[in-house]
Image (cartoon, rainbow, N blue to C red):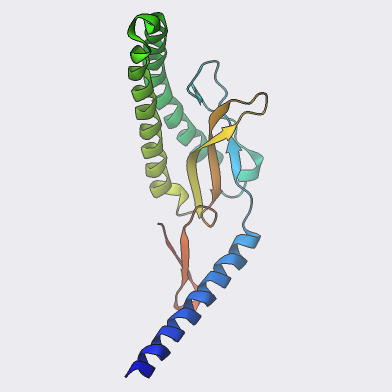
Length: 180
């Protein structure tokens, strides 16, 4: 009885090793992610007030320029709605910071997190609507600025392979995508 269990366990390990090797092979040939940096004049807690709407040449042949511009427009309109409020609260918080021992900055921190979460939800919706079907994944990521040591949020388009999306082979050589 135990021998049968050991055989099943060994077969499962072999299948996992084969899946891991196939995934590593796919990752080796996956293209590097495309980074779209913020291009606005105002940045609050690393989040710029708009992203560059110019179509990156690295996405040519993967996404239609119209779809990219429509997606960026939706992201920028979300930022246009939320960031002015964050800036006002930041100014009020800085003015009252000494009197409140820094507690007046909490509202802007919470609003900034809410803005980031709403952007992440929007990107998740965009991924489900279009980009996962094209084996791409769009996310918001924190990166170091090129000009100084500050951190900024950038928009990254990467292969679904780089983002932890699992591929599983099914009959007739087709590939099915299972987002995690």
